[in-house]
Image 1 (tube, rainbow, N blue to C red):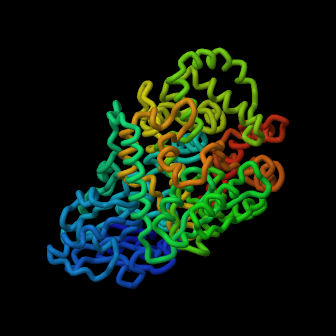
Image 2: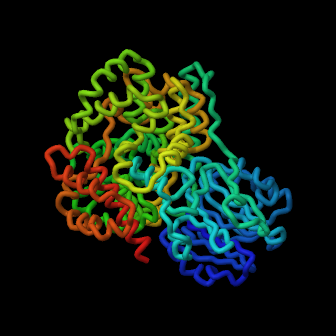
Image 3: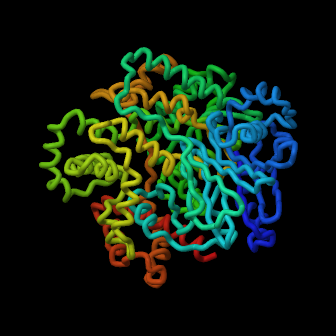
Length: 630
C-alpha cells in the first residue's frame, strides 16, 4: 500500500516539476517507509512506500525493468503474483526483488493492457514506456484504491489523493453539480470530483495515451477493462452447490490476503461479516490478532461483547478499544483535515480511531467490507425486496405516505429512527425503481438540496443521477445490489476505509471483494440472499459452523455518532464561524435563509433530518476553508 503521483508534460521545465517533491510529501501517511522520484524530461513519477511485501530496498519504487525502458509506480497488492514466476523465468526474466510490483511490470511488458486480467488484487498504478513515450494508468476492478487526474498547463497530473494536485496549483473551481450530489448523498459519486477539471479514474478503467496527445480532457479517454459479469436470469438452482462454492471462494480469498512480510491482523467488530473473515483467517494463522472498538456512552451500538465471544471461539489475540463520545470528538479535527474532498459519513470517525489503534500492533488488517452490497445486508434491501415480493404492501404505503410526511423522525432515538424508516419506505411507494433506489441512497431529498444551493442546473444533475442508477432494472433485485457495487461501495464505504486507514498508514484488505467472490455472488438468484426471514441468507448459512451457536440470531447493529448533541453544544461555535453571513455571501454557494431555517430546526424538539444536513454543511465548510484559504 502506497501513494503515487506523476506529471506528464512535453516541457522539461514545466512549472509544476520543481514543486513536485513537496507535493509528493503530502502522501507521506500513505507511504512513510520510503520515497522515490524518477525524472525523464517532462515526465516525473513519484512514489511513497508503505512496505508490506519484500520490505527490503529492492522493493522500492519507482521500479524499472532490466533494460531501463519501462518504469512503474504501483499502489496496492497483487496477491497471486507468485503464480507467474515460472512463466516469466522461462522467458529469461531474472528478478531483482521478491515484490509483486516487479512481476506486474514484466507482465505488462509481455501482455500489454491484458495483464490486468491476470491480477487478483487491488491497485492503482502507472507504467511509463520511455521509448514510445507512452503511459498506461489503471485502477482495480471494484475501486478499492483511488486515483485522480487533471490537465493543467498542458500537463497530465495524477495522484492517489487530491492533496497532490492542489499542492501543484491546479484550478480550484467548485463543480456545482457534484456539490448538489454531495448534499443529497453525503458523499461524492462517480467520475467527477468536487472540483471542475479534476476527474477520478473509474473502477475497472484505465488511461492509455502518448506524450504527443493534446492535453485536453476530451483527448484523455477512460477505457473500461472490467465490469462485474451480470446475468439477469441466474441459473444456479442448487443451494448446497452455491453454499459450498461460496465457502471455497471466500476461504481462498482470505488465505491469499494473509500474504505479508509485516504483522497482520483482522478487524472484528462483532458483526457477521468481520466475524466470518476472522474465523476463516484464524484457520490459517496461529495467534491471529483481532481488533474492535466499543462505545461506553452509546451501549446500543456497542458490539464488543460479541466480538469477544467470536475471538474466544476462534482463539484469537483480541484487543477491544473502549471509547467515549469525547474520544470521537477529539478525533474530529484530524479526520476533517485529512479529507481532501467533502465526505460526511460520520462513521469515518470510528474507522479512523480503529485504524489508529490497530496500527500500533499491525501494518495490515483484513475487514468484512463488501458483504452487505453483494448479499443484501442493508435495510433498504429489505424494503426493496418487500416492494417486489409483496406488491399489496406498496399500495398500503402509498395511502399512508401523506400522513407520515408530516412526521419528523430522527436517527438519534430508537422510536424516531423507526418512524424515519417507515416514512422513507412509504415515500418510495410512488416512485419508479430507479427513483426509489436513489431516494433511499440519499440523506437529503433533491428538492431540499435545491432550496439550499445556488446556481445548480436540474438537467445536469438529472444526467448524472441517470448515469449513477442505470443498472436498476424493473423488478430485478440483483440489479439493486449491482448498483450498490457501482455507487455506495466505491464512493462511500471504500473511500471511508481507504482515507481513514491511510491517515494512519495501515493497509486494509477486503476478501469479500475478491473477483472470485464478487462474480459468484452475481450468479446467485436473489432468493439465496434474502427471504422473508433473513438477509445475507447464504452467507450466514454457509459459515454458521465456524462461529458460536446462535451468533446469527441477533439483529444487525449499526454505528451512530452522537451528532445532535455535538452540533447543539461542542460544535456550535464552529457552526457560528462556518455559517457567518459575510462568509456565506462571499462563497456565493448557499441560500443563507435555508441554512438559518435548518439550524433553527436543529434546536427544535423535532430536529428530524436537520442533524444530517448540518453535519454535511459543517464538513463541506471545513473542506472549503482548507482548500480555498490556501
